[in-house]
Image 1: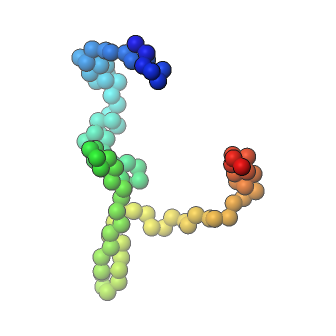
Image 2: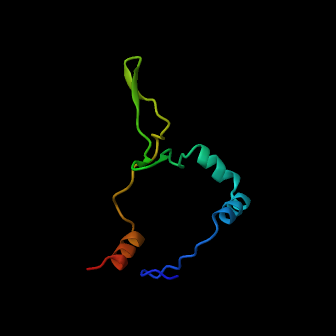
Length: 96
């Protein structure tokens, strides 16, 4: 069966699909299902929220405001200056 958008729709037996996934499902997928956290620390929660990005958290310790989250705070700031190669690529890909 072909839908209007040109996708081929194939109806398969749910029991067969379940057995097939059990054979192919890697350990990483099972671990991800138990703890759906992405590489940057966000969480896939499902439903309307879908994705919750990691949140910064702060606390006062010894009279100073310090980070209490697990987000890396030592990453370099992005440079706004483009290199010649980046500028050339930008010009090629831009539609004027």
